[in-house]
Length: 383
View 1 (cartoon, rainbow, N blue to C red):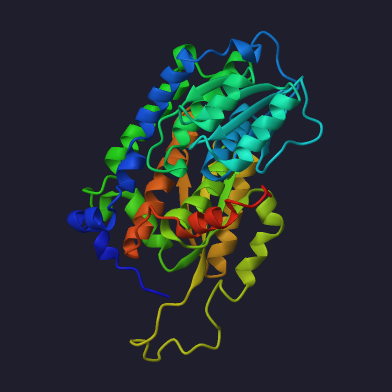
View 2: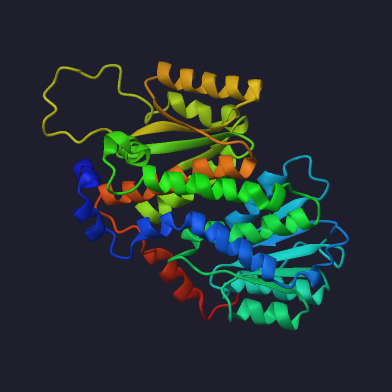
């Protein structure tokens, strides 16, 4: 495995050269995305959604980075939500979806085949339909012709770096149905934007590693197989998002888990061959020419403040890992509301995934295998 060069992280000119399409700048637009998307949603014609009557269920149809918006919505409204929120990743729709339901079709490009198929099925079944994605796109045309609503979003380099633009319309519509509390004049969204602005300063490329939590986390993740476990309300969504960001930006594998579930299965990997060194290993042999061992690292993404049982479980997992020689990284949510706390987690993790790529000398923007898959499937029936 290629060894990372952590000195690259404090070479600002080198970071700029290694990031030619400016993924770091795209991550830094997160706060602006919240504000711009909020304006676009306020200006959108939402009357066709029948806001005076709650839907039986909300189905968020999307793929890849666009589908994450549905995961965020489901986590924000929480288990107490009287309306189920289902995230559907694939073409078509579940058989039970009908006129009583709201389908939210999310596609950053506005042209994702599976999402268009889901939106088309929603029109055929006379379900309420909201589209979120690029303006003047096939998805917008379908929603318009099908009697639905549409919120146009400005793409920031890629779907994965446009998450906030895509998720805000879902949160605002949920609020309009009485399913989410965004605060007076959407104050909770503004708090998240402020949190992200603070992270943009704290995690900027000109801030050295010993003062930059994202660079420090990237250094900890280098050379490791991260097991990223989320706790509390928003931690699991942030953890799953982080694993996808590590894959797409750094082109490296990682494993997502959610507590308490991960403590019932993945925790056993702490006793596996990637967890610690061989007990019979000679610690004093000459290792100059040896590559560093590839080991798992537990990354706890914590949103468990105020939840004693969840806090205790995360603490015990960290203790178990430490006793077995598994390194542990922890990040804890900051802020009051769920959206602000989520922003504090995902903002840091987004920056860390880009710095991890740059430490390996990898351009974080290209996604060649995905592009090749789409090209190969272009003339094939939708799976």
